[in-house]
Amino acid sequence: MFEWIAGNYVTVITILVLAAVIAGAVWSVVRDKKKGRSSCGAGCANCPMHGSCHKAK
Image 1 (cartoon, rainbow, N blue to C red):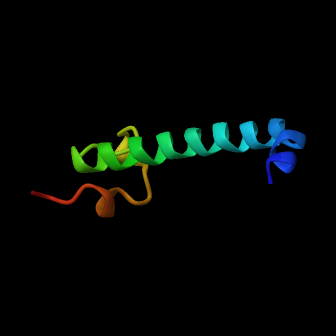
Image 2 (cartoon, rainbow, N blue to C red; image 1 turned 120 degrees about the vertical axis):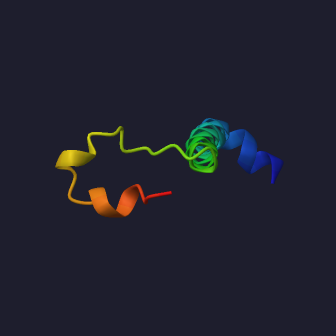
């Protein structure tokens, strides 16, 4: 197994970096959702989903 890792270390490092980037993006979205923020960036007047996204409190 170590021979395979040694032979493919560039691929392994690339996969680990991509996994870290994806995990960071998911973490950011979940954190924003818990804080009540939206990822849409406002401008709801022109959004076709404006009635669904921000419900009245």
